[in-house]
Image 1: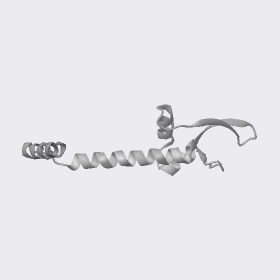
Image 2: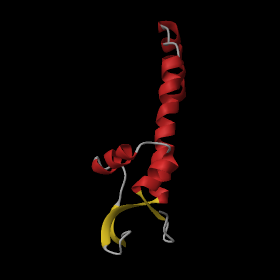
Image 3: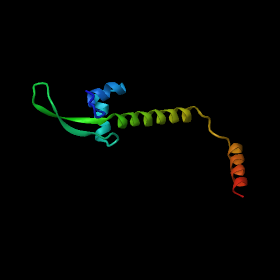
Image 4: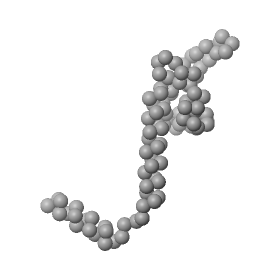
Length: 98
């Protein structure tokens, strides 16, 4: 359920991210994703409390995760530097300092 103030509930957030609902709850529980509990009308007319998440916060989490995944893939594919490469890099950086 998306509201006019730019907040969505957890099932909608899970669909938007393509992840299970429990992952969204985990992100909230661990403090990685901010949420606010608000009273909303339930199906039978009684009010219920729901976690509401700002769309910007949800998108920021997704960008952060995709960046981390990208960096991890690059590091996994990169070959380690040889000793001669490390020495050349050190020399080049020392020349710049002087």
